[in-house]
Amino acid sequence: MDIDLPLGARALGDFNFCKRLFHLEHVDGYWTDTEETRLGRLVHARVDVAKSPDAGQRVASGNWIATSMKVFSDELGVVAVCDVVVAQQGKVRPVEFRRGSPRNDGEPWHSDRMQLLCQIVVLRHSGYPCDHGFLWYAETRSRVRVDWSAEAETELRRSLHKAREVATSSVLPPPLQHSKKCERCALLPVCLPDEINLLSGRDEAPPRRLLAAAPESQPLYIVEPGSRLGVRGGRLHVTRARDELASLQLRDVLHVVVAGPSQVTTQAIHALAEQDTPVVWTTTGGWMKAVTIPSLGSNVDLRRRQHTISPQRAVDFSRRLVGGKIRNCRTLLRRNSHHTDPEALKRLDTAIRSADRAQTVTMLRGIEGAAARTYFDGLPHLFRPDHRLPGPGFADSGRTRRPPRDAVSCLLSFLYALLVKDVTVACYGLGLDPYAGVYHQDRFGRPALALDLMEEFRPQIADSTALTLINTRQADAGLFHVRPDQVTLTQSGKRRVIDAYEHRMTTEIRHPLFKYTVTYRRALELQARLFAAYLLEEFARYRPFTSR
Image (cartoon, rainbow, N blue to C red):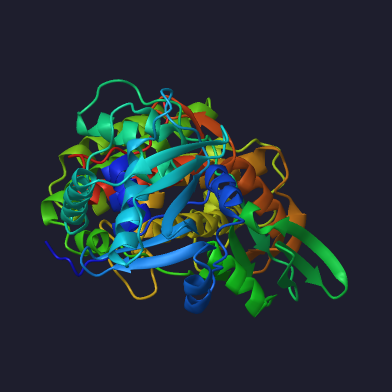
């Protein structure tokens, strides 16, 4: 086993808590900041600042206290950061702070014990006389002693060996099965224990309602030309000239969208990067130009599998993706119109069956193209007769792009751009390459994977939002600039469409597979995570998100 692979005492504690958590956080590099982790930082606030007397003072007094003291063992290849080290009467003892409580019998949890034992052994290897330490549990304000022994050190060495075996393996350990450990885990949205166990066939029980229906934070859009985003006192401030347009806490921002000629201060970019918040730079029309992210993540194996997916798995994924999209298109037509041509629904049914049998991606593209023509031919039947759309009719021009030549195409283009943005951010958050597609061909500057993963959500999110704007008569002449060769959105139009889109993204729905309530934004994130799990072969078949 590679002793040169350094391990932290906290990583060893995580390994003994959950091997999958250990791999996700310390090998793949995933981390999410939650209320639980923030409360944990509060418990550690006083001891996370490194303070210790110099070597001369230690020898002279013999009694000293150090906080956040870092020690390393060359023999074990382990680094430990001790919350507190107390020296008295020639011996030292580490104190590890924990937010929760000990076991019901008063004994420490195994993972906590192994983390503290690691600190004790590393202190001994560093020349400090140490035979015990303490775990301080803040919830019960109780102290639990952990003793060193030769047997305990042997146990520690075995645990380190096993942890390195897991760390050097590209195989992600399977999730725990209906464990209470999952309930407060910070990496629950990445791990998806019950969901992965269900899809892999390891557990037939329905997933528990562990995942929050929606993310804790929301996107921040900066669409007013000449705006400036700065940071002060842990808050983001959007200003224009001397007017403050918005002020939000940093932790309440999921990502930032800067549309057109606006500025973001260096300090704000640093503050956003520190909490892994992306900044998406777009044109005034909503198309992405760049994304500022702190890092693509250390999960190299996931991206390697993405780039080397087998032709058979690529076709299988594409088959299910296209079939799911056509099902959702058919559902939208059937639900929203009493005048939909029955023959159109039959053609879409035929397309679904054809997609399920398609043997190549090229065949699927032909099937999808024919289904799209049927779908967009039927879309005008969903508009109320007295809508207030200006300019040429969608039924006359059909779906047009680059530039859109009617108001409906203009709405759809802008909404699709917003959806691409959200899927791209979700890909970056998981360490996926949004530009390396499976179904869509790779092309310079095109986020092909984001286009793949958004397909099944186009009807449910973007098209549905456009229908809402049209049929509630919000989409009127004030939203559009109508020119002979193109139709674009006004500034007020962009704001209104973004508001409608975000309202749709926060709409709660029952997940068709997992049977719990999620928002569309959470559903989109779930699908991206399930695609990553599909690449890692945690289950055999990708399952698209489809409406009833």
